[in-house]
Length: 299
Image (cartoon, rainbow, N blue to C red; front, side):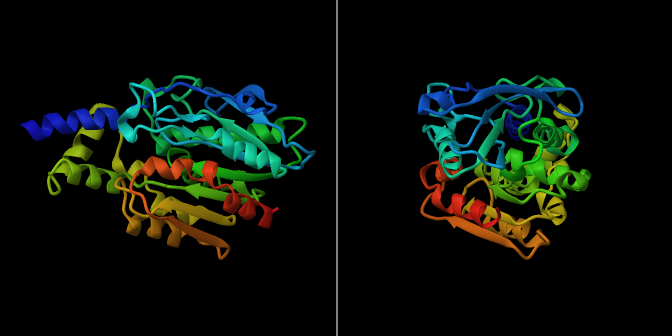
């Protein structure tokens, strides 16, 4: 049937990381930085940048990213990558704002993205293995001689945000001394399946087909990505950000994730006036003040 054919194609894309170029580097913006590499606990080699604060600092922000982006962002303005609005997502101005505000910044590529190592047939699943990259980034900062005593803050975006929440559930001890987190546009698999099905005009049958082929093609399950449940393991002050009219999710789902976070010191900010999910990824590069204020208040 045509619906099966379409959903097979969609699910193959949905479970496979698409590598995109690390198009820009911090020195393009006059920043000092160091190319680094480290390992996730299962041995996958991950690549990153360490960007020192412009003044001596004892604080570091660990940044990860969405898919199909990488530590730089996403070259959505280039031919071949224009499927998500046709504009560039560039994280480096955000990193520069943080370093100028007195934060060291560590940004890295998740496995199967950017320049990091290949694993699991190029697929991505935060519940089964993607969370290990978050643990690896924490281990790197805690074992590097010049950062091991620093206060750690997290900046976790979409895929990286979901991976961070899983890591908190699986290894809560790894987050005991983390000072704060910004969680940007977490995404639930069941909601993704429903919104995709709605777009394909198969709102009733689509989610079932999505789950069927997600298992057949990848061996993955929708409940491998359940941030509404994983959010219950958050233990530090958390600032959630979301495009309210994002066509890939619903306000109710993001609100439920936020409500499940069991800390009193939390904040939810809705980005208004747009529907493109990827605009939310550019927000703090273009409007860093609220981000800086949050980290300053937790430092």
